[in-house]
Length: 108
Image (tube, rainbow, N blue to C red):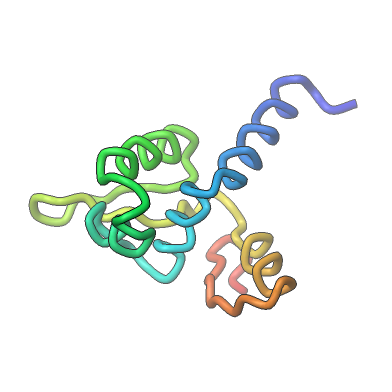
C-alpha cells in the first residue's frame, strides 16, 4: 500500500496542475524561462492580475514544480527539472494540442 506521505505529495502535484491558472502558467513557461510580466501576458492579462500570477508562482515554487532564476532585477521562471514533463506533453498531444516540452528528466 502507498504511504500516506507519498499519496499526499502525489495528490498535491496533480491538483496543482489541474487548476486552470496554474496549468496556463506551466504552458507559458514550457518553451523557456519567462518573467512574471511575460507569463501574465501569455496567460491573458485581462483574465488575471499580476499579483494573482505571482501568488500562483509562489505556490508552484513551494512544491518545486517551477524554479526561479535571477536575471538582473527580475526573476525568470521555468519548469523544474525534478519532474518528468512528458506526461503533460503527451496529454496535450492526446487532445490535439502540439507543444514541444523538452523533458530533461528522460531526455525526450
